[in-house]
Amino acid sequence: MTSNAKPAAVDLAAEESRKTAKRDALMAIEKQWQGDWEHRGVFEVDMPSDDSVAPEDLHDKHPKWMGTFPFPYMNGVLHLGHAFSVSKIEFAAGWERLQGKRALFPFGFHVTGMPIKAAADKIARELEMFGPEFAVPEELETQLSELSVDAPKAGGTFRGKKTKVAAKTGNKKYQFQIMQDQGMSNAEIAKFAHAEHWLEHYPPIAISDLKAMGCKIDWRRAFLTTDHNPYYDSFAQWQFNRLREMDKIKFGKRYTIWSAKDGQPCMDHDRQSGEGVGAQEYTCIKMQVLNWSEAAQAVAGSIPELKGKK
Image (tube, rainbow, N blue to C red; front, side, top):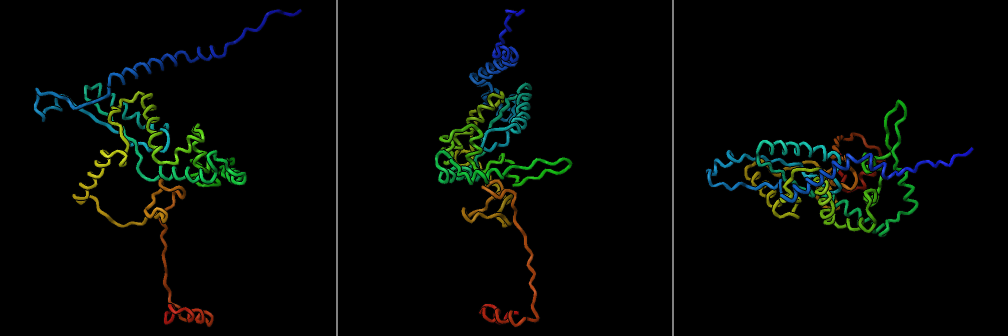
């Protein structure tokens, strides 16, 4: 005996939507009010204009608070560590607003130093090596496979075949591979051969992410470091000039890693390779030779600079 009953069709999309209905509703409310905050400029803080009090008493009547966040470096997107750290000042700004203070939370983006330029140079060099499609020769692919990191053995310690840098980049040897992992097309990656493109690409993404987090930031005051922003650059120069006039900073000498190619010091995170390499100190011991062998005397005698030396 057979049954004509058919199994009920399951609408997977509807089932998934039902499971996330509460989450989706909360996110919709969140986006609605975030849009309202931005439209009304809720977090835009200006100096108060109040002629009823003397300038020296202005802040007593209109208390203020300002907090800042260490400028994230713009050679990539923000990550969970940024979100954790920014949440602290975000909550502080919200609390101060609840206390009736004019809470100002500006935000800057760090683009100083060599890492962005070094990464841009890598893309330019890889375009020359592999072409616009970044076609890596088979023999080099074999070398890349050797960058894998060994899994720890039971009861043993973790050992990697390559450096910490290889582990941090997910075993990607080339810069274009790191960016492919971010979902970029080869045509888009080629644009990163120009350092300026990094400054145009990543800050807007960071702003979008921070807005999605609901941060109480006055985005009118957002800026980039370096002379890309002449106002901030002038402010930084002014600080250093004043500190030098006060004899708080001065020029000095120290051992450093020197880039013969660039003709300048090259700090740890500025290097394309060699992260963690420090200055190496050597001790030379000068000893006087009392008895030379005949062969040594013959060699020393043939070198004019060593004649008469002990």
